[in-house]
Amino acid sequence: MSGKKAVLACSICGSRNYTKTTSQRKDGQRLAINKFCKYCNKHTLHKETK
Image (cartoon, rainbow, N blue to C red; front, side, top):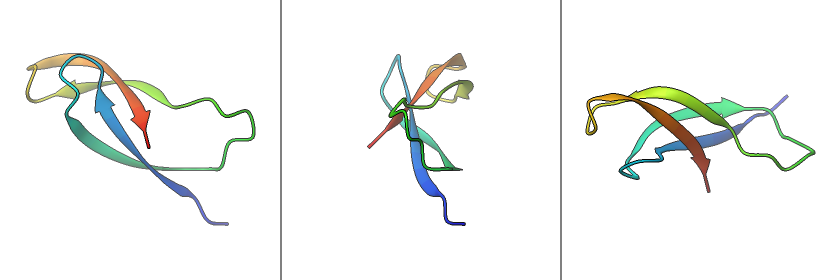
């Protein structure tokens, strides 16, 4: 079982702060998680990028 490495970018400043291993999605939706951004200095929505 191999996963895909997803890079999470802050939706406010666009910095790529996190990586996460995810399973392959058949529906094509991208991952979105609230995480702490050290550049914005607050919790923001981080979305999966290519």
